[in-house]
Length: 105
Image 1 (cartoon, rainbow, N blue to C red):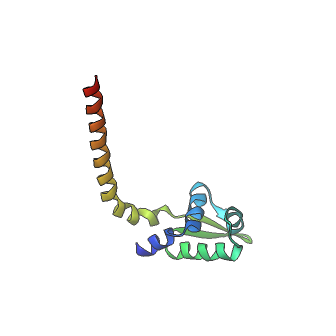
Image 2: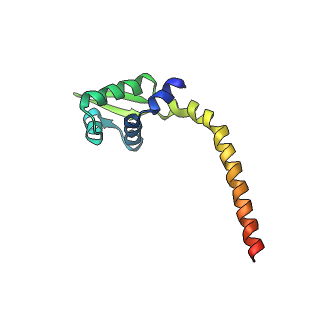
Image 3: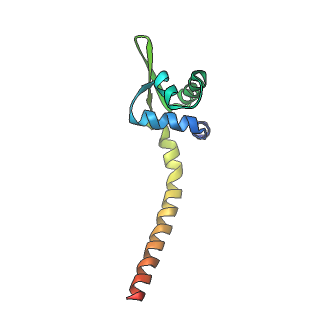
């Protein structure tokens, strides 16, 4: 999981994942969306492939990259207790707001 989190720490990699979440893309298409040179995009794609966040397949001369969401499952599981903590706090806030409205009425 540490390698996935390190990969996600880079904003360019997160942009790549956001694009691939919507549709598969070539390295050239991804390079057009990022303010970095194509070799930099290739390095980011290699990191994402190595940690299992991205798959690549050959289509004639092109390489098509796609998101592997299952690689995020471990991160999702790790984040769940934190989401539960925030849900509890937001529920408590909602209760206090409702009490305040009733008190003003």
